[in-house]
Length: 79
Image (cartoon, rainbow, N blue to C red; front, side, top):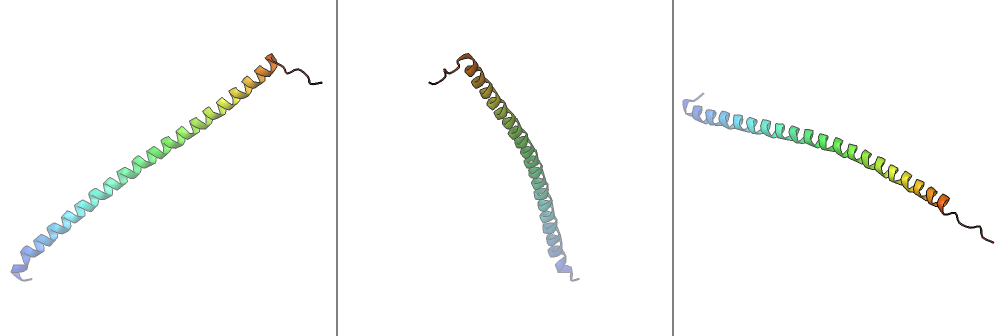
């Protein structure tokens, strides 16, 4: 190898190392973001299930109220 090419080789190695470090940092950032997204999706599913349960409870209570109103205020038979 020609002695004058050593500084150029050192610069290329340094640049390559910097690129590798940046790629590793970006990979880590992407993995962290994916983990946060997975956690958030799990929370969304839990909240959707809770909402579905509450909606079912509300419908059940509405049905009970309607039945109680019918018992307290029966409609007279039509003639």
